[in-house]
Image 1 (cartoon, one colour):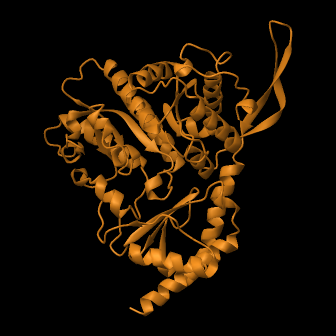
Image 2 (cartoon, one colour; image 1 turned 90 degrees about the vertical axis):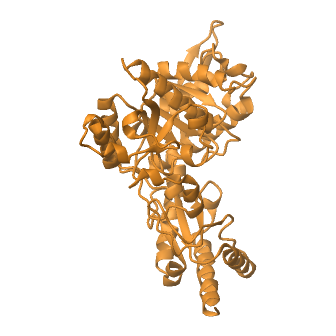
Image 3 (cartoon, helix red, strand yellow; image 1 turned 30 degrees about the horizontal axis):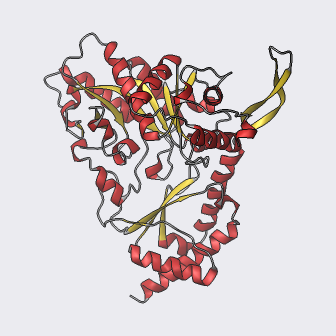
Length: 437
């Protein structure tokens, strides 16, 4: 991979002082920033660190633009299933001393991320423009003694009333992984962006799967998907096959601050080469294709060099999304399959869908083993137990276990008929099991 990418030397402590002509890492960052239409980008070892850096910078920047912040608590707003609130042990609160305003819930004081992780989020909708508008309307009413709207919006985890917080960032995940890859309608993404600009609030994209989202929206370029956002985080291992790695994208000022914060958080390793090389290789392999012309340059020694140019190629991720859509259409035609598993969403919006089952985890694993023994097909590898009650928008009262189904680089090659055969046999065994009860 190093040879293909033209890498001849290591980076040292992030090559912070180097340029793209002397550092492969700077060149990699510049290439990604170009395709997303942003001024600069910063490679990070993990998405958790990248997201924390973005929230910290936006909070600090927003503070300096306000003459009198007073005792207002720094905060950001997000969907109930945000990775930041579900899977990072409240790093934003424990490390950054920030609060999260949870949008889209009736009675946010009852927000319980641990319950969502266990029970799932069947039927929950993605972040909507109306939810953001509602929050800002409540915030405007904070000085009205007759208004009670802001009092019913409490932050997490410390239940601070909205009127006592200062929201510096709206965070939108594209797509929403925990609700089956659903997408906020694009016109509403643009609406949220305009609203944030009017309010002086930063709009940040949790784009861990932004390539899948871009295809789901039907965008021809990554710049289209990135345009509404001030800053973006992307991941290189989830859909691109890298060892590990993430990137923050934004304007030059933001990225300059991000490099400082990455050092403060211990992210400037002696060398990032193993992670950065696998990330760059995965980006080019899955997201780009070469164009016919190339850049020509003449060195100080008079030698002429040619450098290949690249363009965004959506075919890899479109093939994954279309594969899942085709399979789901086949499964819908079989009534037995429909009665044994409930998919959410019913029609995939990306290459992800979640499934919910009305049998126990133990029964499910037994059925999976029987299907594999009979057909040689193992339809699921990872299934989670979920309880028989629901909260926070879910409707899981009859469901006892659930799974995530993602079509990636490997399983996209499996014939559709194999998927159908596996699920058909799966539903038959479940029907037999229920008939014997």
